[in-house]
Length: 470
Image 1 (cartoon, helix red, strand yellow):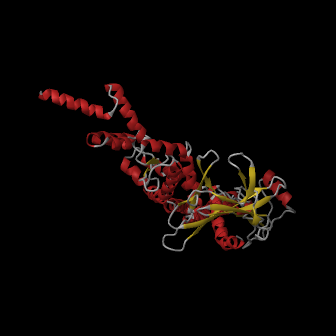
Image 2 (spheres, rainbow, N blue to C red):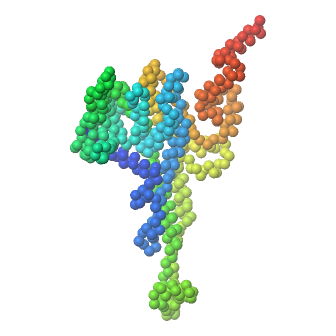
Image 3 (cartoon, rainbow, N blue to C red):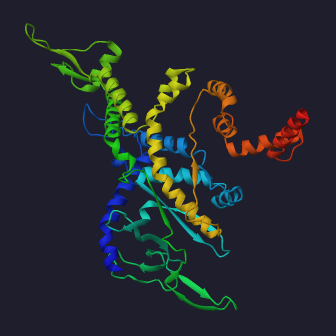
């Protein structure tokens, strides 16, 4: 285990470094604020220079905006799961829970910041299926080197507080498709690594008497209970697509603010001043509105000059606008300012505005589909569903975006006569759950016409046709 930990440490530390930097930018602690320990601060007298005293450091929160924008676009409405069995669908929805959309949102945020998010599942004491999101920097996967890239094992490392000593120690878990083995370490170099023998307690199922403890547990899940949700093929964090642009924007913006503060400091240069000291100069300037100068005449340059700072406003404004635009282009997001320009635009114009975000969201969805299917199969296995490992799983993902509802409703109305009820329910702009909408429509038919099932309507029509023939 010591050798395994050491061999995977380089990859773990590099992954953690990038993830921490992404979190810093997500929490608005950009590199511009490193000198202030991650806090944005205004310092008008931050530097010991006569003309350049201001040292304001305020970070821009574009990374958090882009990440949350995609998470809200993709996961505000959770994916609908359909395994072609209504009863089983309801059971799966119950296991996924009411907060399934929040968990999907967190997975998108984690994957954007780390490059990959992880879900861990287990069976609790009541034999119920449970799952949770593991912080990405705790998980180090170990894959095969062939083209299948099968998950061989998972290393999970995290800190835990010892209630007896009040000190933190490291826990290292090693998961396979059969069991989990747990170790603890109170050092930073694994020299004090030892089995965590009190981790699991075993009982006699008939008497309830404790039979012993161990650092190993056979989980009987049949596979490693960790599911990866990668952001992209290379599991690359989103930040590094546009980090340099954010840093440029922060530097230009804060330089602008510094100049505004510094330009208020006007330095007077006195040549051949005729007074005794600066106190007399200030008094004469305030009371007499005049000062004495020792001028020799001719080419003598006696007098007062001013040292000021010129601010290239137009150049900086242009650079900031171009940089901000590039941040949204490289980050594949939607600039909120663009919505002011489109007004009451058509659906086509709105779709064009969401074009870059849709491209990124579609890629995220494609990479998440396998992980979500694996989670659903694990749930079906626990529910003892038939053909749980081969049953077809349909996923319906819904985007949350500004749209022209009137235009969408008109389009649905025009094609309603030649479209199925399911297609109409899916396209209806006021419907959020198309399956529930189909059930509600069927209930309305029953209440209105008094028939208990859809086939009854066909039976009645057939009877009417036979009567007419007779």
